[in-house]
Length: 423
Image (cartoon, rainbow, N blue to C red; front, side):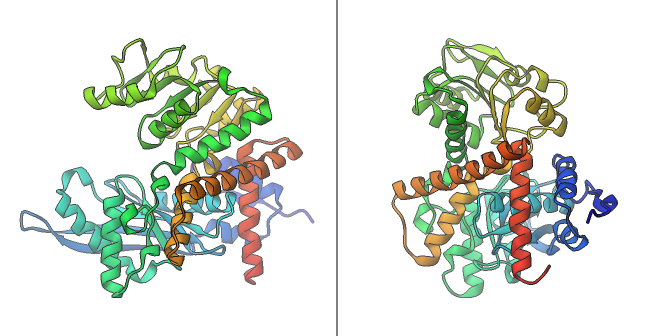
């Protein structure tokens, strides 16, 4: 029986602005019940904490922290902790929901969470940042843990911050609990591949996509927008595998050479000069120009909302691999689909990071650490399996990969809720 879906209007304050339109269509196509819509629309838990920290100058300042656990039907919730001066709980909720989808897409037993502290980390000393981290963990300690909610690095947090989180939590619990956080240094239970698993997972998916399109590595030209942690690792990995990386860019613009760039030399150049521009045998290119340059694979690995209705029509790549979060606006999705460009959505393309975190969690729980080759083999298997599942739905329903990924994720989450008797 057809249902009235007038109430499907999704408030952009509650869900990611980019995926609002897509989800509205999917919810209608799946003919969800009122109860199913409610489960997908409201976080299970969201809380705000306030805690004091004594700063180096002797003054005490109250800090605000948020944590949202959107859904935990498939397992303990999982998501990063970020430090940002403009952090809002509504946006944290958006990100927690997308983490729930991402974990379901790659079929790992986690729900989605996200959190952080409202702070400009650049204005604090390292010692003050540690006190803020520890204060935040004390405030939320009852709600996190290896079988409740597992934090990880995010914006302006790194493995040092994860060590402070681990140490503070273990002091409170009075026992070792390495599985309560991922993204740790190897010496404290982390895994080496976690540092670049987001980029490597994306490369595995890219190679699977190229096989579907009959593209040969030797003839493929790659352009990478964004040369931060993920973009740099992606460019380096592809270069080492024999791909021709012709263009890379950062916040101040980029460089291009259609014959290919020596990425290791580019990395050294940026470290010594602080910029990509000025690299020998290359021409300057803006971020906007990179998006529409002559290439076969385009990798947005920087900011959101880079591809829109204005520039999508001019994209020349055959594959767009979204290593950034939400780099493509909904109108650009449709344009690229009509142009037969294979767009591999962020919810799949950059999920290698959470898969790597899952492996770290498993090893911590079992106190059994895998060798590097096993980690890479398991990561490759997880990413390619997820890609094949999504590609199969695309072919069957003649839809975008984003829509297929969302459908698979939503069905898996709702199936878990049904098995638990919640639906």
